Length: 254
Length: 262
Image (spheres, rainbow over the protein chains, first blue to last red):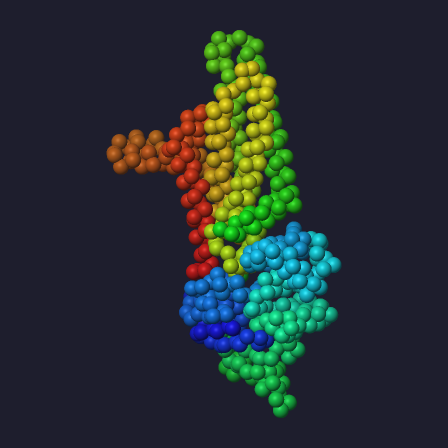
């Protein structure tokens, strides 16, 4: 479903993403892990077609993200680091607008918006103005926006950051249900640096460190024989000498 | 093309939920009303004085429509960039720029949709102005000449649309609405003033300089606007405004696209 082939992103001499390849099958839920500044956001922005890659490419549902950009983008639901919301719009109006952008046919638009709101628990706030919602609700609107067109692939950049524990649990439950077969079996890539989140949701872990893929394994394999994800994370990120200089921050705010 | 309507419609609605549209419309109605009353006053004054020179050229076009349109032209140079400054800068601030660029829409749709929303606001301003001018047709004796008035209003509409296109461009180039506003005002004023410096080039006497002078003069909005607003409708002027709408929009599209290859 997602096929990344040797993705490289350079800013001058700094390689934010350095030759990252992976292949994710339909219905997989993958945790995209790494310390801050590892290149997670940059990789996701490349996969979604927001940023070009310096080298390499990716296929989303068989469509090249650069040469068949429109078809590839149609297959993706994307929640950026900051949910892309218009504070002056109400929830239903906003989701209808996104459904139009994502080519949901007019006849199905209303049902698609209803369904997204229902799945994300937004039915009660449908007429509320987004700017007046709590952070948890805004995050849910962000997720609703990503799933409104029933994309095959969901790319979520830190979907639970800044939420309280109850909200985090709700979002996790939502993601688990989105991945389940009866809810369409979305392929989900989820970036985070919260390891517990990965353990709760994901079946596979891809670990990025300084732009390089350092680990790619099923969660079962990592936790077999009593192993802990945290240890694997620490081992993988400390394999090279620990960085004393501050990490370069290649992730430009676009 | 399919998404232009969605983008323009959303933008237009957001104009009316924020105070921007109301502030601009109110300001416009007050300014237009003020000039209208003042100019009609001058006209009546001239009529009463019986000044023979005034009597020969005593018509609403010369006394009201033309000076009004020319004054409002200057006001629009400051007003229209206020309408356009947030077009792209607010998308960047909301993070919705990222949503739009990762949606299956073309960048042309994005830019044209934004421009059309601003163009709709500009057209609304013109409609308000036309309502005032309508009084001259209803109660003026004799009323102004229709085609001449239409040319003057059309000139103002076109110059405002080109200001909107320039405002789109500066908004696409920066993240700061203030910089977008100020740079649009500067560009629009420069285009207005260019015709003033143009004659200086022809003083040099060389053919190349004269040619440059002609070009600078052509680039200025001033002569084209003046021709149109006096009722002289020429393809040259219409082509100029089409150029000044299309070129900024094309550059704006490139600017939005540039995240993709930067």
